[in-house]
Length: 288
Image (cartoon, rainbow, N blue to C red; front, side):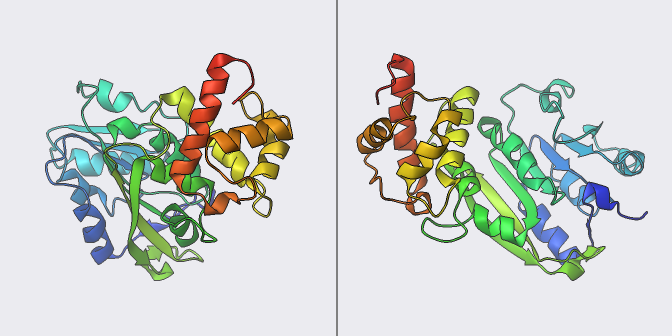
């Protein structure tokens, strides 16, 4: 079956890569999800490591094929889902198998590169329930995820990912590892959850505000963080960022030099700024 460009499909065919990726999923994992199994290169290897195995496939033609592939192995607890990872109700992964909501989920995926970042942000929202992920990205995105402060790859997505996970590049794959071959190299990134968040440990609403704050700080990479926040302040849900005085006060309280650029700050500094702005938001006086 031919790959569909509209779905960003590039099917993995390198057996050594398959074994490496599957090996990142602990044997006997209580719940494993594969997103976008495609032709099933990874699927059998992942299923063997899972007590409950779920897959999520968007492609109308591939879904019945992959469902039959695993269904025919008599896996004791197999749940195939037909849908889009950008819209899927992930609660179904626990609800439909009848698993306790605190059952840890391991995710493995060769993500479609055209929507990989959007899917990642949805998974990051579930960090309390996902201790490990092995995800494939185009190399440029993968390097950004694992980047260090002060490097050109370091940015908004880095801080978002590293807030709750240690991110490492486990494997680099050349285009020939796929059919059809993409035009770029690919990487497998391993996400291991931290014991505690580096910057934001709040709930879903606070995490969403944190992501918007960090995005605003990186929106104008050539500008200082003070000027970036002045430009973007009206679009962030925090009071006091509409004036230079308010921005300067918030940065000072967070221990951040206003002349600094966002790419030099570790995630913890963004966390300090969030703490200051959250306190001002709760007081409702617009003063950090």
